[in-house]
Length: 93
Image (cartoon, rainbow, N blue to C red; front, side, top):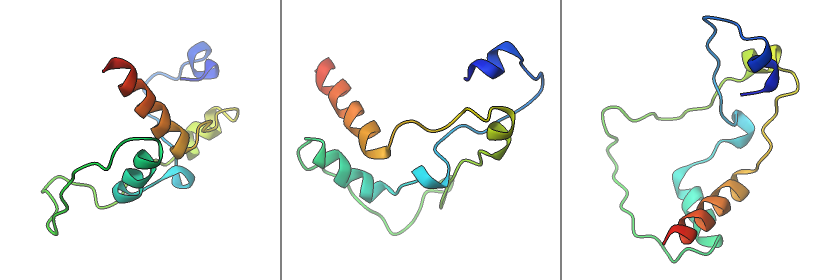
């Protein structure tokens, strides 16, 4: 949460947090990035039928957050985020 929201909260407000359209990705692309970060080829299965509650596609809508906190911006690229996750997992093994 940004400092602007912490110092001047807006009770009852709801904001979407996430990367927005510029930081969206697909699972198969993420698997490639995880492998590039140093993980051996992962075993996964793809099914042609989605689960009942699966999103077909999701992008966080950031307009309200950015209007209330113009200094807020996504600061990490998807590739770097996944690499950090890989390093963290390796640390705990």
